[in-house]
Image (cartoon, rainbow, N blue to C red; front, side, top):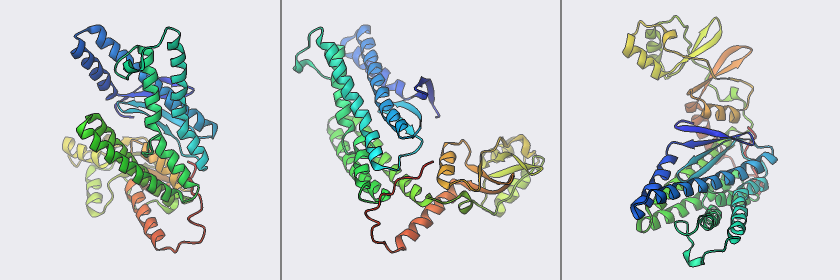
Amino acid sequence: MRWSWKLGEVAGIGVLVHATFLMIVAWVALSHWLVERSASAALGGALFVLALFACVVLHELGHALVAKRFGVRTRDITLYPIGGVARLERLPDDPRQEAAIGLAGPAVNLVLAALLGALAATGGTAPLSELAVGRGPFLERLVVANLFLAGFNLLPAFPMDGGRVLRALLATRLSYVRATEIAAGVGQAVALAFGLVGLFTNPFLVFIALFVWLGASSEAAAAQMRAAFRGLPVSRAMVTEFATLAPGDPLARAVDLTLSGTQKDFPVVDEGRPVGILHQTELLAGLAQRGPGARVADFMRRGVETVDARDRVDAAAARLAESDSEVLAVMRAGEVVGLLTQDNLGELVRIQAAASARRPRRSGDAARTAGPPSA
């Protein structure tokens, strides 16, 4: 991901740190230095944050390893200032498995709290009144932090762990989309509460509230999209009326095609074989640098992300979301037969949603579990 660096791999899962994570380390170190005017205090604060986020990595690994047990791969784990995010390849079809994955992270924190507490007890424990995340002996502070992480993540604030467990429980009785909508609504209500409390106490809660609110909205939209794509082949969603360019064409041809239609990205085909994509950004850059007479080959993005027309739309949409390109070339028998873009996927979702709204509800629909399709 952009602005992220890979730290290494654990159990075959890449662990990345986002650039913004360094801000929280620097902020904690500076806060300790301002209070105690001591370099050792600043270093101790920074080390505690690093230890805490090591626990966060283990929390996310708990999700990932349980997901792996159910046949779901985890792409990577990324550390942000507000915590860690494990990107699962897909969600399991069985809501009970999703609930187990959601509970695995907090369970890891509880186990860590017990182990660290037992280790700290060997040297004597500090009074409870002296323990907090920000003060007290190092190990005892980690115990408090892990208990806090477990409890906080179990709040029913979708898309946090507790919200995902709530969604899974609802999905045993409702459709997957409806369960997500309810869980997202609960999550946004909790986010509003976080924001109001944060305005008068801790501004960091406002930041968390924003994350929860946006995450809930995004997950609800993603669930609707997965429902719209279920079972559809790419051939049903692709754009079939499109123009191609040759490597030797001048940029002027791309300008003419852009102005005469709505297409913004053009596959570049050489003897029937796709060799690149000319995006609108590259077209504009080429016009600014060398004018309309410049060759397409000099500004196209080489290499083409392709998908087979028989592939499922949900899998292709996931590839498109992860790709640096805004378009996938759809292939059949070695030829480009269509394009798949975010715009036409969005149109498909809107059409499917409108059709579903008009379609009469069949008996049993409300009780049917509708898990996401496998990727």
